[in-house]
Amino acid sequence: MSEEALPEDDRARAAEYVLGLMSKDEAAAFAERVQRDADLATLVARWQEDFATMADETVEAVQPPVRVRRKIEARLFDETKTPRWLIPGITGLLAGVLALVLLFVPVGTGVLPPVDPVYHADLAGEDGTIILAAGYDDTTGELYVIPSLAPQEGTAHELWLIEGDNPPVSLGLLPETDPARLLLSPDVAQSLEGGVLAVSVEPPTGSPTGAPTGPVIASGEIVTL
Amino acid sequence: MATREDIETWIARCALGDRRAFQNLYDNTSAKLFGIALRVLKDRAEAEDALQEIFVKIWHGSKKYTAGKASPMTWLITIARNHSIDRLRARRDDHDGDDKIAAMADASPGAEARVVAMGEARRIEECFDTLEEDRASAVRAAYLDGETYADLAERFNVPLNTMRTWLRRSLIKLRECLEP
Image (cartoon, rainbow over all chains, first blue to last red; front, side):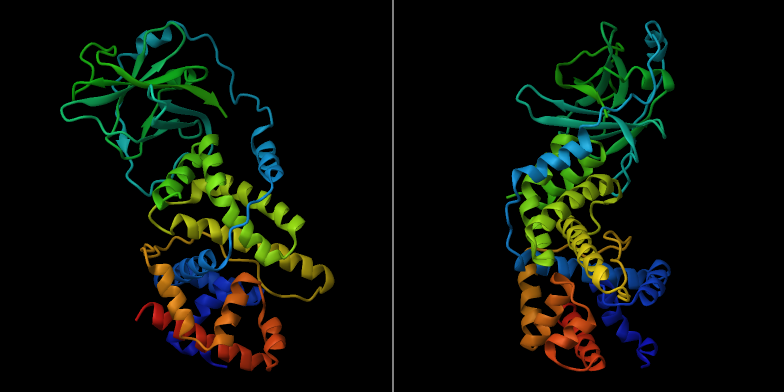
């Protein structure tokens, strides 16, 4: 058969690839072509989308027994993880940290969140609504945030790290609602463990005093993963 | 009913290690994904094991999911379906060592799929309906029952090459209907 010679046949070949109708060798060769050929990759993605949509319509949902969820959670979360690094006493370091100018870099959509987050925090308002989710990746030293509440006109949201009884340390002004990342200095990164993140309402250029001046609208404990 | 945005947000937050987001994702999608595993594997105990693996893959794979590319349900369903088919074929391989069918393609190719609009599902159904009934059911069987060309040829009682030609023509017809 000479279907390889017919370009329109890629439509069918891409579907066969998605369906798993190719032999191992054929599929490996096709996968290599997909890597190099963006149009072919698009064709594969469309078939995946269309077949998945068909399956979503065709297949009835069936409630799985509760034990499945328990087993999954036991597998994923029950292991007691040793912290990645131990935290030395850092009292006194935070004052120096205050002088740092920290800027969040908006990352837009489509940028990958941390590969292996070690800390996570959900910042909720008084009514329990989550206003910000944050994750820290110690391989890149970046804090990744997803804000879900834009500041009101003429104000900005500033993110603070509170560690024990120390004064809050500004981590910078948050973007409106786009995910963003911020490179933390090692000192700040070390004080994440056991700390609290909080969001306050500030003037558009940030707190003029270096401490929160407006109402704190959300806070959340930093959880070690 | 969870929206596309809800599901995207939960997946993004799973990538941040957010367990509550994972629970929301599980509560809102596990019944559909269990349905798919059951349909493919046709065995409840095995589908339960598969569902565990599927959600472990989702949790670990959430970092690779990029919002705005594949729709989140497509991403989830592809993981569920491909894992179930891999299991089905591994089970068959135990009985039949010379099965040469490839493992499933990755669930998240880099390419952009168009956003599935409301009504898209209906259009896909309509396009399946333009195929002769047994051909439409052969395409569905390949996706949902993991049938190979050999299985399909046997079921429709035609030579293997005839089955191949049939199915390829049907797939091209389907693509032309979906993207005129």
